[in-house]
Length: 433
View 1 (spheres, rainbow, N blue to C red):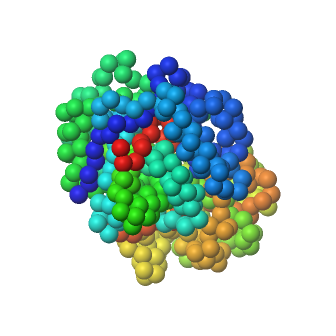
View 2: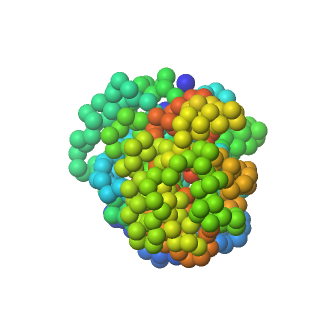
View 3: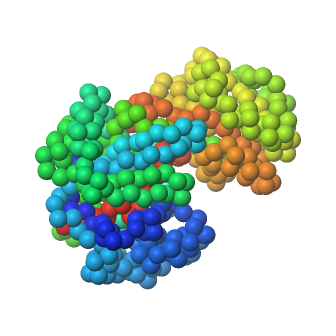
């Protein structure tokens, strides 16, 4: 069962403007942005959570500096520990890549780590070992959770949502606010006492689904086991952000694929290769700007989960294709995919476009692929001459994430894009305290 508890978070002193010290998640920060954040404030969270600058070789001294800074900022009163164990309500008012404004509500808590075999915390994406080494070194140095992973929980009866709504009107004096680089507003309020206890109790019998942070969860498990081997149980918990799958502000957006170092035939031949499992929707469109209009409209197509946009930079042409049913699903199920996995747009794309039509080994896909979360960014990158194909898809649905995780299956990396990202620096958690 899920053991979610309040904790005495460590937060920036009220005299410090959060806008100056919060940062995006470490794994989405480019070198130039990291440098700007470091210059913005000597106490910006990037000094703690990104001790090794992007592109820099990892070295022990960097992690030691981050750990020393975390301790010094507490000693100097820059960071202050909460007096009362609390959950931290976070409201994020944002405008998504689709242009719609929403408010997503969740909360930050402490979670007792559980192995995946226990079926308490369920993953949905595959991971690679290389991305975990940096976080493990930071754990060893700082012995703290400096950012959260993002978990979803089912709240079909609305009990957790009602409890949070009742507490959402906390005094303005208790709230802190910050804006991220996209202008989205993040508001955090500590919740203690009966409200926190009720929310924790309601979550006890519910499964939790990893939305974002698979690598960090697996790293936390590795660090927990490492500390347990030394007779130390201080690393048995992980700081997490939890959001209901029923929250009206929760949205999943697509991550488009930019394919390189793969031979892509001319459009006519590519369509011929795709013909057994796809049909063209309309005629090819020529020119970057015209293609942008087509690709921006993918979500407006009927049955959008079966619709894909393909852009060939060499010909400066794009085409919309739609998977044939039942042919596509039957082929995937015959290949060993469950019916749920066979319905996923990312499965259809990776298996029937990239593998069947282009001969790409799914196990090697990461070596040939970059990603973009907006059509303009993708087309801008594709125009640079580095890529042979842009593959555009519609978003995975939250219900599909639950179904895949419940079956114990996983999707390819970057199958979901939950936006906005969680800011680092809203609250920290020293392990074992």
